[in-house]
Length: 155
Image (cartoon, one colour):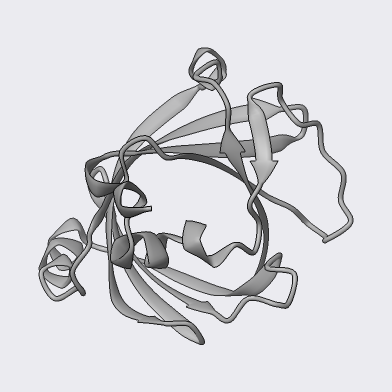
């Protein structure tokens, strides 16, 4: 239940040619305390509730617990969320033995594109595709919980 994740800005739309799947995600936050966030997510017809703990000093690891809930439950919980719902399209791309998830944000975060990769260890190596730019792992302003409070268009 420990998540090891790295985040990067994306420099071009070339990833779309390599994607094998794209999904619209709508998510809100019931709690955005930095020590713990509680997220509600609607991913097509599936709902999820997720609790994430505080990141380590590098921003690489943190506790994550997720449970699937019904679409109806997710829609009801989204109505209770703090202001600033996130709307994005997630593209999934396999690069060698890794899955990159690229989020293209819309609404108040339009123009922001972030790629994430989950790893098995902090020192695990991976091939960076050419469309990967600056690493933003651990930069709190790129966390979805923060983007819901201070959207990209206000930067």
